[in-house]
Amino acid sequence: MIIIMTTKMKKSMMNKQLMSVLVMLTIIPLAGTALATNSNAWYWVDATQTYVCTSDLQNGLTVTGNVSICADVSTSGDRWENNPGSNWTLSTSGTGNDTNITAEDLAAGDLGVTNYGYNGSYQLVEANIEINQNESWGDVLDGDSTKRDFQSVMTHEFGHLAGLSHTTNTSSVMYATVAIGDDNRQPTSHDFDHMDDKY
Image (cartoon, rainbow, N blue to C red):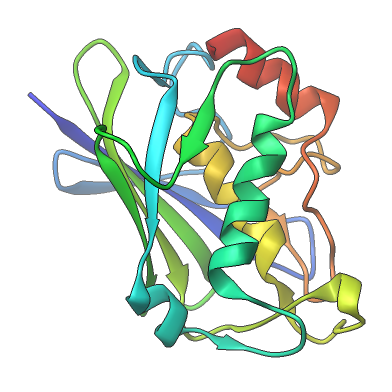
């Protein structure tokens, strides 16, 4: 049996969190940050994950400034690979289940969503990442402080792809919210520690 689970990154000007889990096609809203009693429960058996930066993503987002969609997706994934304590890697080619990254018409307030499929042993078996096509995306390090930082959200969603859940640590890339103009691209030692526990 494969169970589907969804995590969402919310936009916020304040420190609010909201996460939903889709289990067996029933939506159950949660107010907490844990998806399981064991925060290390969700993991991939194969530590190398392949992903596809789809043409839908490239053509479906409104971007300004110095944003190059697929290059920024790759850079965001590379940040997780810079963790010397983990053997989890991302690839754009391989024989594994591809994770498709697409632009979607998400609910107001949702910046990105990672959908998982997992088996009864908490092993992730499939995933897809959706980015909100209704947002105006930019590069805050390029001086675009009036937009959402695309790389910050992609880095966060790649953390979910690895099986990481939200945290209450506001400096963590896995914190559930990001405000307009905020740069939260770099995983912290806190984030890497959680990754190390899995891989």
